[in-house]
Image 1 (cartoon, rainbow, N blue to C red):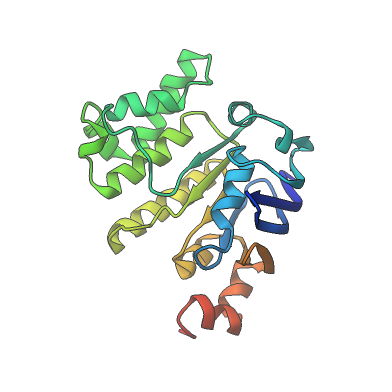
Image 2 (cartoon, rainbow, N blue to C red):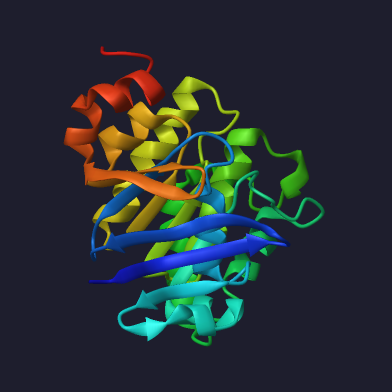
Length: 237
């Protein structure tokens, strides 16, 4: 098993956001986490990344305790995140944003190779490499956020709402690229409001409600589950 979350609790002040979450991710999978706003999906990703403190429970990456590591050590261990809302550095160029994603790398040759691969995945970024990130379209900024996360050559890529605010044709492009990234050997954990697209992409899925995992199954099984259809897929199609 590549990643295991065991009985995870997270609090924001006196409010508990996660109430004993259990998730397992095997190497090579795309695993999606579904749920309404406020269910705890993003908090789960932030806990994996070391960006929120764990109250109790464990996050294990190949048996190592991520919940005891700082955020930069988690990146060095092989886990990076493309955050909700993209959060690119708007006053820096595309190339400068990508270079920041490689801040943990110490092999210039590998950085160049990775940059070339990202430009193959996202040709638009190469075209815009000297353009300020703040002047990019929403879709281009999403590509940049994903490319920046990939610059560290992660074993696991965390994607938080990659389709948010994008036109349908761009959503298709982004998810086709996620599939290609996964085929290259990167395991993906995907938080996504577009449940139907996410489940068609993923191998397995978890459904969260108010800080709890309430359902876990293969993506195909979740797609055909009547409760999931009614709650997240707009009824049976």
